[in-house]
Amino acid sequence: MLTGKNVVLGITGGIAAWKACLILNKLVIDLHANVDVIMTKNSETFITEQTIRTLSRNIVTRDMFKEPAVWSVEHISLARKADCFLIAPCTANVIGKIANGIADDMLTTTVMATRAPVVIAPAMNDAMYTNPIVQGNMQKLKDLGQYKFIEPHEGVLAYGGKGTGELASVDEIADFLVNLIGNK
Image (tube, rainbow, N blue to C red):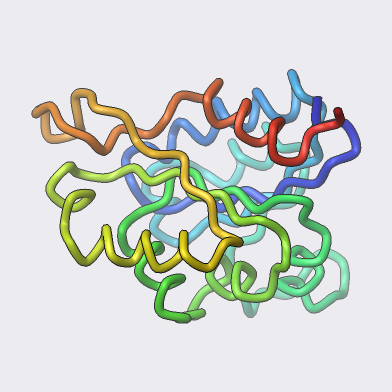
């Protein structure tokens, strides 16, 4: 169970973004976690803020410069609040930004400010996932110790072909978080 635990969920702009809805249901309904969500601009191409707000039961953060609902330096308050930071799905773009210290949106800025463990669940085309640059960026983050990866599965990808890049299952992601920060 994750009762009393605060998870910050980052949702990035890939086709697997719809699965964030299933992850939210699992974390909020089944595991009783409090989940704050940060959506990238590109994630909004695939799912809506309204859907995520309804499932998370919290205000969704999207823009670094939008007036916050409650006054705080929002990326700092979310970073401090997190028992765990989950990015699911995570694109090659966001992995690259984090690995190279680029903080140019609310998600990457908040990741840079957190001291909580950051769990990354990549989802992308198999050619992107196996690209040496992406693999190098992932290894760079793993070597830092704060960043944990839930590896993608082999499956049918958005383009119709089969390869490694499918987002890990909801249960696998939930089990990983319970083992990492759960109430023992």
